[in-house]
Amino acid sequence: MMITIEPQLTSGFSFSGLATVDIHTHNLEYTAGTPLRFFKAPLNGEFKDITMTMGAGSYRARGSTGRFSQFIIVADLRPQVTVIDSKYNDLQTALNNFSADIDPAVYSALLQDLADVNQLMLLQNYSAASNKLNTFNRRISDNSGDKVPNVWRSSRDISNVAGELMAYANTLRFSLRLAN
Image 1: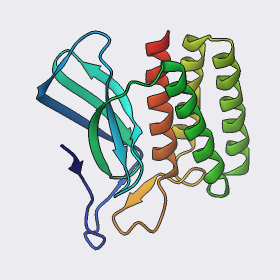
Image 2: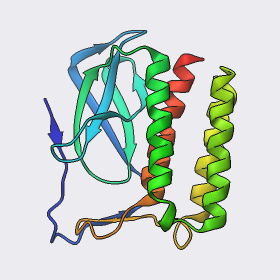
Image 3: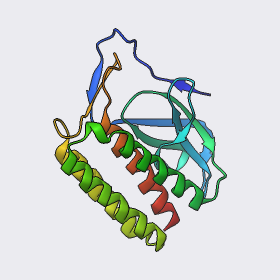
Image 4: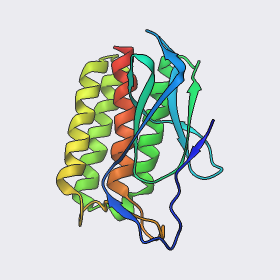
């Protein structure tokens, strides 16, 4: 089953920062080591893992995003290191793509944060890499607004840079913690 949350262009709906999406289904059971993950995609786009947390009992998952999308639960059978590398690359690509929208000094600091995360990942120090992602998110949060745009509007005329970057960092942190 796929869930689509996509407000009408003319609805006037907006939010700032992160949108957190929780899903709960009795049709799937959570067990330790489950490969079930929470994925999202832009309308008719490529699905990517956004899982931030999972819960016991019937399957519960939480993810975050800087915009609305289509959502689905998937059994992700990729090796954990492949998932981590993919999520890191997605975060790095998003930061690069948003470079023109971010204050240059903040962008430089965020690049350094990600370089530090990458170095820690290469050393397989996933706990320290996860903590460094907290620093990355704090830096974004502290500079949200003028230095890092943080608003999403249903008219889709601006990018929620802060929300998107923090969402990528959140799901990478989740996977690093699983690998730890």
